[in-house]
Image (tube, rainbow, N blue to C red):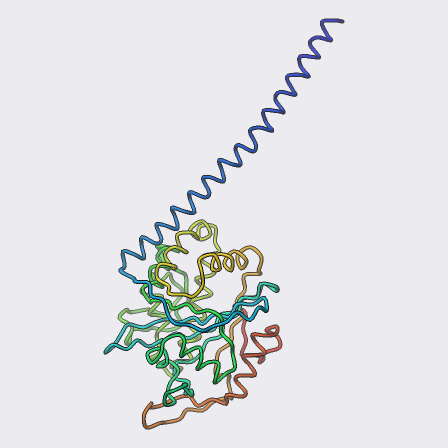
Length: 330
């Protein structure tokens, strides 16, 4: 009986020691795992920055007077900067991106490059020329004057960034349904059908405008490409590459946002939102006409009151409150 008691006591003490070792090991394992995760994120991000540096992209600070609206939303001027011609650089892609931290909504407004706008201090001209005249600050003021939209931040993306980011997301390319054969003025030849496009090909697809749709078709394809990229990034393989993708992108982007702000927005969208992007194209159907001018050629003449109303409703309310058929969830 005494022997049974002693064996029982030793067994009980042994179990206690095992439990104690487990309690000690678990925090240690978690700590080591966190170290590996931090190191993985750091070196992956750095490798992305190295990719951007190898492409010869230079960072440049822009004058910008945007103020935070303090409404739980962040409205960002997103620009795709084209190559310089005769010392002037135009913006083929002009978008307003907005993330609502409270409702976890991501919205995107695409603006046609040929919209005829009043430019503060200059003669009226196409909106894609504003950047070459006075940079992001003049474009911010122009959008505020013509549409009444207050922009808080900006991000200017070099086209090299797009190609590099796509190739980092997936070396085999991003799946896209090419709607027709394309080759005119895009330096590549694309065939109709669903296929994977690399960075150069996907950029060419997004920039194609040599058909009857012109810029309207190009804006629609730009939104299609953004959705396809988002879907590719949200795969398991894409999520694991996020630090490298972020490093590659940030190395090509001139922005007023800090790295911390970018990471906070990206983390909120990936972890808390439904991953959808609501889109609006300006001008809205039935609110514009084409017009010939002596100094700017053929332009899009807007009903600014109607388009401003659609934009405010879209950005300030739920997508369902905006123009039916003009707002889509990608």
